[in-house]
Image (cartoon, rainbow, N blue to C red; front, top):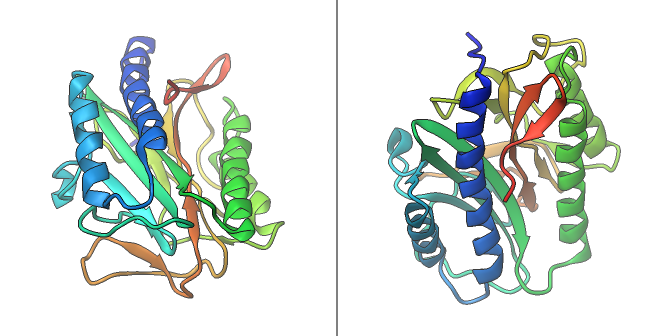
Length: 248
């Protein structure tokens, strides 16, 4: 069941979205070669709590950290720990927060030091996928148009679109209906209505779209070991058009 949000609830979600956006701004300023993903996660948790918010991922379905930190061939859900971030790696950081009972959710992929042209181009394309999806997140359009826009933007440049993971509705729960695939027919899915709030999150691979889960039970990696990028915004459908809630 899709739960539509009131204008008042959307404003609360904007506050939650601002928390995650500011947190990712902080990550962008702090991330550097030599630090561990565990150290970065500690900074994320402290920053979220300093904004009178709750880290939305901590202990969610048993996830042990406040941020998902995924490096190079890790697509999403990387568990922070002792891994040292290296120059030339791309690092995807996915952050959630809870404010007054509502979730905010956003992700960015960061280039650490000098990265290869192919990694840089992959990140640029994934950002364009997200923007193409936001542009089409209009009242009266089909949800499938979002999916098709992402797939077309990625595959037109030869990238792989992850099928095993999708975006989602969001509100009082981190994951609500509807699912938001990053691929598929423009005719699929429900018609977009004012009050829907969606976490749109293209996960785009340099090579194959196929992924598998590491033995830790959380971390998804590309099947061919090629890099992956991930960008995400929390977006409300309104009468005035798409309203990106996860902005600083």
